[in-house]
Image (cartoon, rainbow, N blue to C red; front, side, top):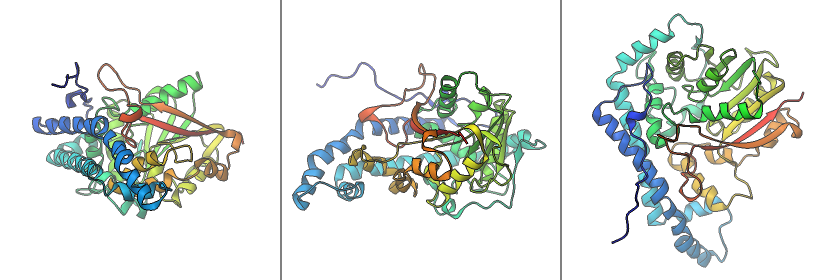
Length: 403
């Protein structure tokens, strides 16, 4: 008999999720489903996922070379070849179904108690100038075209006018998608930002921070709590996410955090040099090829001299990244309703930032890892077990503006 490991690597229980005042309350069965999905995702990443590379090395690549007399020239040739392999098809179907099951469970959980959730959110939202919605703001077509992450209605969908259903669904299910890798509040990315800036610029206290594409504020609330004297503006075009995100932030004590409905392509409401820090967190890959440069240009315009621009993303594809890794990272583009993932990660972000007005000497790259309570939540995977595209480790593209 094959020896069994002393300890099975499992995700933390769903009961470890922090219950802030507007968080949806799971039933026993809903929590059990999320527990299953969290561990299912972990199993696919750490146990089943490496089988894709073995399939490629032992079957797909030899067959490709035999047929074409050469190795694949790009990630798309690998994708077409791998899509014929039974193991990859099996793994891919499981992965897609796990996301659909996550959305089904989250949506059921939210709709069952939507009256209560809306009422809770109103208690934190009504009469407060830290939430500013603008019905004239249109959700861009590139964000309306698909249900991002397979989430019905994406970030902007409403079950009824004025509700918080999209934001609540996103909040309650991200734990399962990441297998708990972002911590109790799914804010490990924001905690990583705080950790990085405290090490990089100890004692720095920016007057104003702008977070673009904030959704429900997972990654900006930690900054607001870390810099309580700083005015922080979190913008998005999706009103339901902003309603929920504002209520969530207020419940967590982030009273200096303003949620504003605004398209980041046009920041005309703010003058040149208004912010000391302009950032995005896993947002650029959801932008079209025309919107992304505009947003970077606007971010540069409203950034003060000496200010910081910081973008957390997965690493860009380059000649230094093996084609197989580019292919496996591309899975979300073709299977998880992330239509701009592939093209965005093939862009030269440094060139785009220079064209926006930064000098080459302003630019830097770094990496950050989700900061969580590792006695409860798992450390992000490295190497073969990494679930590329969803892991709690990000590449950062930044610049300190000199002029």
